[in-house]
Length: 98
Image (tube, rainbow, N blue to C red; front, side, top):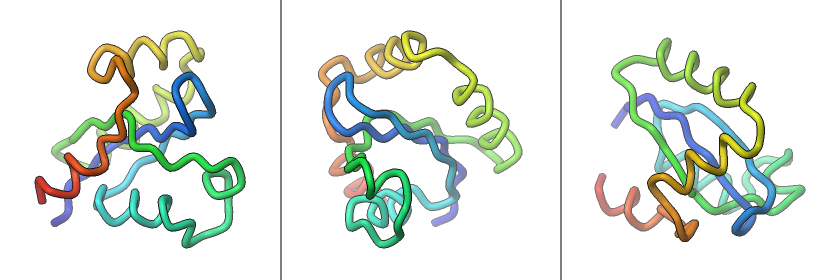
């Protein structure tokens, strides 16, 4: 199912962060977790889905992604912890909801 999303992956609590946008969150996170492509997330082992937002269209998702990428680290951490204070991996939640 196509559903535009912005997501944040983390290596561990307060570890390395990665912000991305996708139209298929389950598929994209699986690609990160299984290191199907070489890049930042596989190099730094950033595989935990710790935050995501769902949007009606890709335009708004991309706009939000660009906004979040400009934020300083403290703001990003506050955002994550506002909905996920223990930095749980939300993968199971997202995978089973589809």
